[in-house]
Length: 108
Image 1 (cartoon, rainbow, N blue to C red):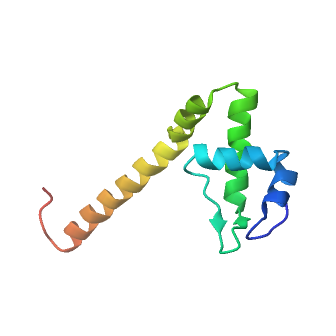
Image 2 (tube, rainbow, N blue to C red; image 1 turned 120 degrees about the vertical axis):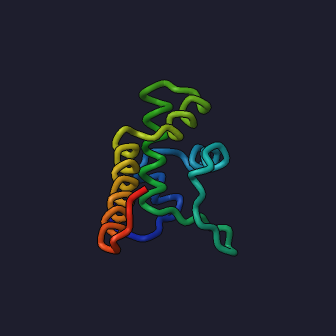
């Protein structure tokens, strides 16, 4: 994949192997897939959109999920994402504790 900021639908279709009609249909079905549209009504996609299209393609064509099943799967957070959120929350708590100790306050 080229290192561009935005891709037109033709480029996206070439990269993903999808037809433009499929990409446009999936835009309506998957709220995460919203390309930038300018006054010319030309769609501009990012590399994140392309990654998402490939993931949707995998879920529908390889995993044989329905559209609804793919939507649910995309909403689920991976274990790695959950662990990352927990890690960030713990960091915040530890920083609060450290700040309290430095200020000589008791920790409640």
